[in-house]
Length: 251
Image (cartoon, rainbow, N blue to C red; front, side, top):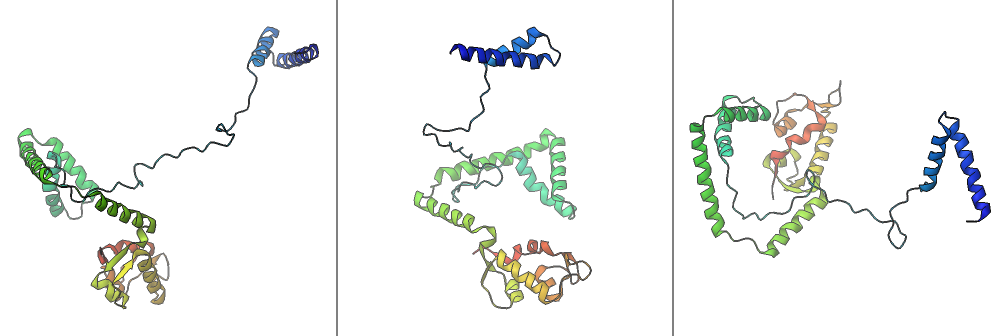
């Protein structure tokens, strides 16, 4: 550094000290602050780059949890054994549903949990024995199980990729007899997207939308028979797809 550079830096430091003194601190503190800044000069952050100078691409994490595509499982693999609680649920859930048909799924699950926690060890022994039997069943089936060949598994993976690429609304289904009757054109196959379009066309053609609030649909006899609801029972039109499942059969 030349003598001129040293003088210029000293003048800059003095100017910074005078500026800091105006805030009310002592000269000693101001001098220390300027000296510390000189040792640690400000350097603006730069984007991450590689050795070639190009911006480095941040590697995206694979999607996990809900929304992630599940790995294809061998459909011939024996079903895993049930624990004591699942054996209890399998027996008790239908009984609770029969006793209280209007009870919601969360309420049934809550009641099952309460009953299981309050159950005595003697009563639980029954379900522990059922669980042990199911474990024996699993071990026996697993000992004779032959996994699918890799070529067969790859076919299943390819089918999964095709379904994902097409999207859930584009998957083709076999039409139920009631659906073919409703459509009136003897269609053998249809997907959810096309069916939704056809139903909305029916709404408009047959004036099925409620005159006072067009968010709702009022089914006539034909539409009510297809949907499985009473004639004239209003429902939110955009929820009509929930009635489709029983008419869309796997191919």
